[in-house]
Length: 297
Image 1 (cartoon, rainbow, N blue to C red):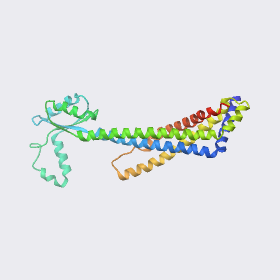
Image 2: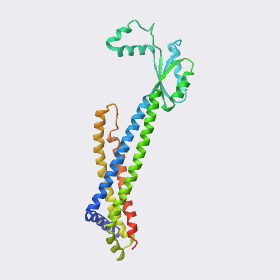
Image 3: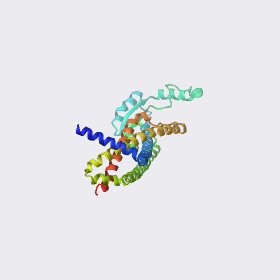
Image 4: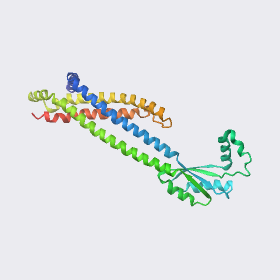
């Protein structure tokens, strides 16, 4: 019963303090919201860019043409040897007859230019489409495939893959720098905002200390106040991030339709948890650390 009464007192005092010092409470929530929103937006954009690049890399493949001297059965037998090559994830066989029919379909109205070709005089070759486990090793994998008997040639987008890898590294570095910088700025601003709030109440803390209140008796209302401000700031930041992300999603889809962004619903629980967690840590941590100097009276 005593603990329940004490908690009720601390909660009441914490809530009362938020409204009593309304301007500083508003400033603290606003700073938490702004910092979380900026950091979260940069992180989500970086996540989507990396996701898009990884998707493009996964679509990159090596096309392997089977030697013209190989029969259809021999060409299909090459599958086992391709799968045995290091870094090969999967292979898909396409016969030259299938390739010819697809070529006809792609030509549409102009398909008549292929009328002289059929299964007996098909100029195309059987081929394999090889996907890789690690696209960064495309050059080495292609070299290994070329050494296999029955391989008449290969084709791959090595330059495109290399460019995508460079873009991905640059995006990762830039996003990391921005997140670290925004995080450091956020911590600095929030810490000083909380310190100002505590400084404006130094006389209140000193009076409580002189009438015999213990340090933790003084701290608990401030801890609860910081927790509540952190929850409010983190919650508002989450809804603000939701709105900003939806707008960015629509804007980017209008300008770059091929750039597929992850739907916010996929990551909303993670974002909510992180924002609330960071808000609570910042609110409680800032209150406790900033009070230490005022408890020594």
